[in-house]
Image 1 (cartoon, rainbow, N blue to C red):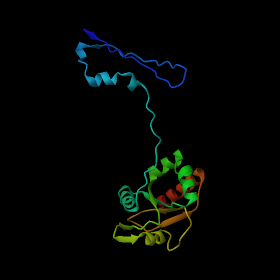
Image 2: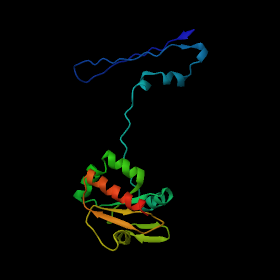
Image 3: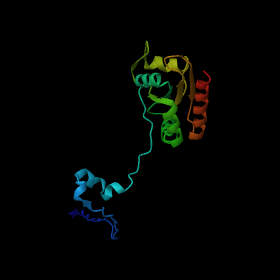
Image 4: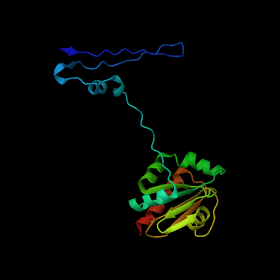
Length: 188
């Protein structure tokens, strides 16, 4: 005995025009295959539509978590030093850090860390403990730069070699910088 599942599609539209919805009827299921709710769900028209995959994004970590991940995965730490009032920090977030090529490059070779030096915090990494102000100065070898500033720590846990890059950078320019930083690490 064959069972047939019938789907009824009702299209509701707030506007005055009607929209036709085409629904593909699944093939009948025979008793020998013992249809289960799971097999019926797999053959439903809903599963035949492609669900858009959200674009990849950067998952920004705090400094301690980023340090542990970078050491474990042998990646470069990228610290985005920002403030809440900084206009160019927001532009960098909106334009550069949402660019698909930049996201792919950072997710592959870097550990992204966001840090606001104006928020009080204490960081423990390796055998070191620093507050926000101390870490900010340490990353820049004792110098303070404007905002935003990107800091690159090549080999956390192995070396203290760091590079800094102050200011806003459009995606293409930032990609070149990421490639230069990767080359510096590869030369080690």
